[in-house]
Length: 383
Ligand SMILES: Cc1cc2nc3c(=O)[nH]c(=O)nc-3n(C[C@H](O)[C@H](O)[C@H](O)COP(=O)(O)O)c2cc1C
Image (cartoon, rainbow, N blue to C red; front, side, top):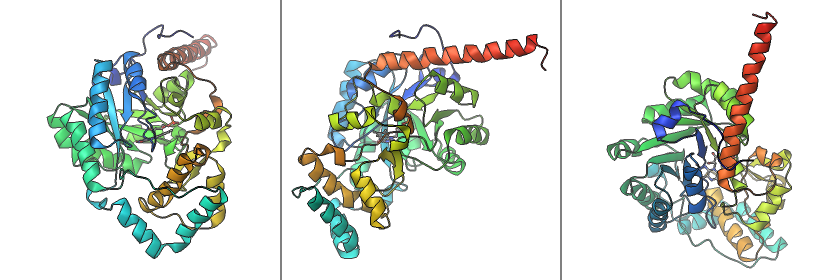
């Protein structure tokens, strides 16, 4: 496979974002290490797509430093994604307060985690970072992205209403993500410049509607606002399908977990490399929100526990100390490993540049084949 696309695949998204190919690498944050390393983000942007830094696991100062590092690695546009809560003001709990609340109100949940720790003989450990749950921290992350005038801000999960005017005033574009038409319409009302319609197949937090059904619905509901398709897209056929459904581009996460530049723990790489599509299941085990993750023993134990998942950020706080203990003991296989169904079709590592080229060239070929079909039909006199 060639390392650079052999031809052009241009949509209006390319002009909007100032990129060559309508391929966006999805922001992927994680508790430990950076899935979307600066090297990955820069490689995708340098290859003519749009790289995106998943900023969720970074504290505000690290976020600033990483954005500056990215600017040293590429002069091309890139994006930063942050997981916003549904309402910024609602996220006002520190981990310490959440832990106390869990002990008080949810002893059965706390016992489940303790038993799990005992089962694997994990010494007690605590997550040290406050990220994701503390409102001041999320505000500081957003402020860092605004101060740094990142070309594109992607609001994962939550409501970007507050951020849009400030971003626009700095010449930035804002992108919303939606898993349903209702959410997509909400994102438009928040003033975003484009919406990513993400189907059930996707890795990480995901909704209930499959991409094939969701994308055309969102395209119809939001027209003329541009829509980008996500969820289950990992080769050129998927890109072509997204364009046929009316999207102007694609947002791909899982396929970039197989990029040489991505940071992924070895245990997680091994899990994904051997996975079938059915091994990537939707579970609320780790965050309380539906997320597609590799089906490990912890996900199975949670399913058997009969416990109700707690709302975000409580479930996340409940599980984060267990994950910290597992990671400290070198049992990464017990930590959350988010990935999409399409991981079941992917094997081995490639440079990110080659992944972008494969998506573009494969889409061009698939679209060419569609053209052949209609020409054949016309020759046969089919209307
Ligand atoms: C490992 C991993 C981490 C993710 N982290 C985030 C995140 O921090 N913020 C976010 O908005 N989406 C996150 N996502 C979702 C992706 O941005 C993207 O929407 C999804 O991967 C697209 O579907 P696909 O995996 O089928 O390509 C994550 C996905 C994965 C696989």
